[in-house]
Image 1 (spheres, rainbow, N blue to C red):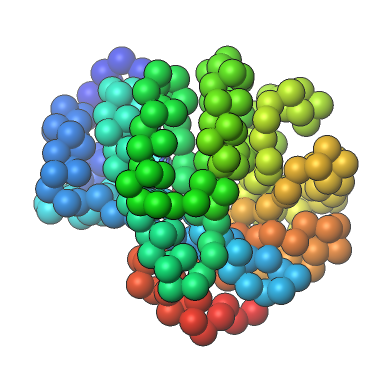
Image 2 (spheres, rainbow, N blue to C red):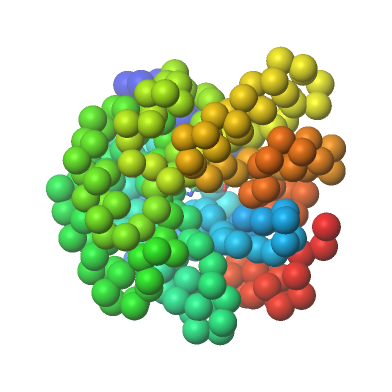
Length: 276
Ligand code: C2E
Ligand code: CA
Ligand code: CA
Ligand code: CA
């Protein structure tokens, strides 16, 4: 049974305890996950509610271990970050996502491809070269690539120049989980980002809490004033959609439309359209 080791005990939430996985075993397995073909990406549609069309997808990591089954990213990514193996995994994910975007592009679907990046990746001195190489290998048009960063990364990485370098590659930067950190939009405007994603917790509580609803509309209006795209994540109900739409937030993502799906299922959705 997992014992407290350093500061990582809290990542050992129920699921790992239940499966009785030791931290060191998990780490070893994580190092081998790529070679063993256990990692996969699922893609969650982002919908433009004005046209009701899928405008892009977010790539989300899935790890299916031969013995332990599915281990959610919330459980293994913190450990991957801490140990640095996230660099290898992140590179694998970007390569896979870029190749997939290119495949859809070739089928006539022009989709934005959003990929999550952790702080460690932004701090990696080889990051820009790695991305350039992947864009080169896959032939993906960088204007369709979006990197999702958290406020935490943005501020902690203190590498504003690095963000400008990324922007010079022609890609987009978006701020994930907006509202959960400590920064304000007025601070964030110093960073070269293109979009903000309103965190799921705000969307979730909107219907019951007038204050949350007020915060939401303030975020939407300010974001627009500052010329950012704004997208709401974790949209699950029609009420939420109606509210967001009324406030001028047209881009949405959440279980109401679709969960993250294997690429072939997304291809079907692209053909059939989403039901809304
Ligand atoms: P995130 O980037 O905030 O991703 C959104 C999470 O919310 C995803 O969980 C998604 O499946 C889930 N979600 C989407 N719509 C809804 C909804 O309507 N309701 C609810 N309750 N949940 C919804 P997932 O796939 O388990 O990913 C969890 C986190 O793991 C991500 O949060 C992200 O921080 C991290 N992650 C996933 N893939 C990667 C990756 O390739 N690299 C890095 N660095 N982190 C990743
Ligand atoms: Ca994200
Ligand atoms: Ca998020
Ligand atoms: Ca999150």
